[in-house]
Length: 361
Image (cartoon, rainbow, N blue to C red; front, top):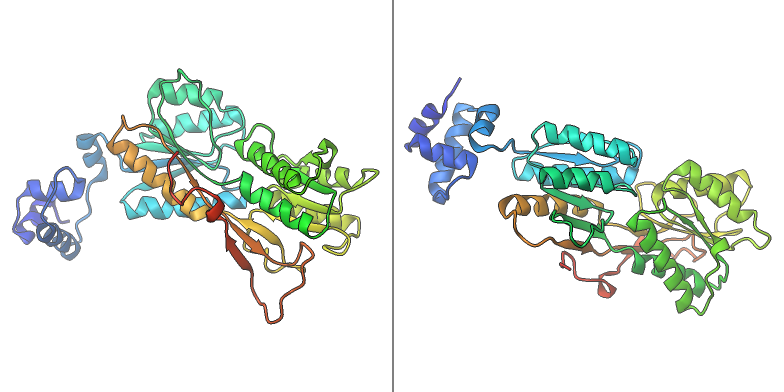
């Protein structure tokens, strides 16, 4: 088995130079770095990660706590995180907090005990215990998708990345009002999540833009999952004056809403128009095809990795929140006719009404 000494001899450099290339502990001239990398490849050298971590106090691993198994949206985020981590030579440890505050606290502690260099977390609706643990142990952390508001005197620095929520939701509601709808129902997410609050705010803004009053009876919480969304949709359809159009707050809730409509024998968009927040792989396969807001899921994951690595490099850097724009994907579930010759979606970038991609606030 090749050693660092063998790599150094093959590349014609010192063992220290090989170490600097492997550990990024000092700048190395490009041609020297390439010579070392070529030697590593030629000799099949495999670095001793455990020994390196003892020297550098870094394991080159990232802990990711998201509900990836139960939420397809987070699966795409996971792909972005994994790609970003591998690009920078980091491994990934995954845990599913199941959107439960107590379980969230446990899995984050387990990841931390595995000596990950930092954490990326999609926080629950009640992240107080999580914040206390991260603050007590000063764990470098990036929150993704859901924003967290820490007390003003909280000393812990954490970065955040998410998609725009309010304006894209207002865009969906506005589109339905342009189609003549005046009673638009909303299947909202889990109470307490920033995504839920912001999308409800966007829903209200979209109504106000059309001169329509907000009616709380037309908002039902689907708790960000399919079964609860099916019940919420059924409750909205049971109103004395049910909605003529429906907006769902995420892709899992879209599935629940469609199930409720099917159970009642209702057709989209003939009996009820439907728009959804979250595009997904099957949205273009439904009949009719689903009009949706597409979030930059993979880019959110990749951006979270970049923020975390920057935090590791500069622990005292001011905390940052990055918001990424969404796209309006115009299909036919909203009641619009299929344009002649159209075989795919018609995405419209919403960034003109949102902060620039990657902008800091």
